[in-house]
Amino acid sequence: MADLSIRHEPIEGPSAWIGRDVHPNDYQVELSVACQDEIRRVVDEIRAFPLPTIVLRAEAFAMPACREQMARVRRILDHGVRFAIVDRLLVAEMDTGEATAIFWILSSMIARPVAQKLDGTLIYDVLDTGQQALPGSGVRPDKTNTEIRFHNDNAYNETPPNYVGLLCLRQAMSGGHSRVISFHTTHNALLARYPKELPRLYRPFWFDRQREYHPGESPVFAAPVFENSEEVKARFSVHQINSGYALRGEPIDDGGAAAIAAMFEIVEEDGLSVDFDLEPGQMQFVDNRALGHSRTLFVDYPEPERKRHLVRLWLRDYGRRAYPG
Image 1 (cartoon, one colour):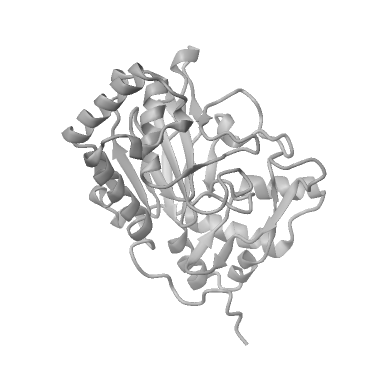
Image 2 (spheres, one colour):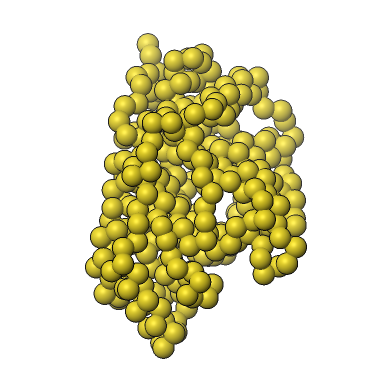
């Protein structure tokens, strides 16, 4: 009898796209003149009546044009190609704190920001700290300048975010190119070309929990790469999987290694991903369970004030706002 938890039919619809067939109007959302005027008024209000960014509520500000644009972003995330590039905040007109506050407000129109660390961190800076992301160190790859292969954010937690938002404040001197890929398309390719390997991706792998757990809890978390509920959802990060098995002191099983190799063979094929350089002021949003995203290695400017800097928000409308969800 077939295992009904595994999807055996191709995934159809706009979420199962191939990069070369995706057009900019499928994912680009432009902030209109009216929206920019609303943002300027909100920045003026923030300057006059400052508050911590995390207490700002979108409904406290009259921003109908921006609300309309962010509703379009949500439709793309839920029913379209599952990623959007919003162009753009005029970051030259505001300081880093003001730009982050506007990003927070606009993102809150999509869904509720949630904690990205056990300590309750809601706003997360993506930049190179010079550290190494070693197994069990708790140093995430986004705190380095290394290549980050296709993954879902927070794959090592029981409740990953539904959506991930990124605001680019500064680009690197070179590199740091962004890529997104449909894990629904990846699943279709696995079904067609690697039907023997696909079932292993529906069984658990060990993930390094990145030290985001309470004393006495396990440093690793077990979960499958794919689960089939209302639709196929992905939970993939080869860095955390490799580190999870390292922390367990055991090699990944042959079937698991073959399945991950098959997955990477597909996602790294030319033409499947959409590639772009996120520019200052641009915001990227992705459906975190349907898409994988990655970035290439980058080289920073030597001056600290010019180093590559992105701000990240995790968005999820269910469960607690705290990290465990």
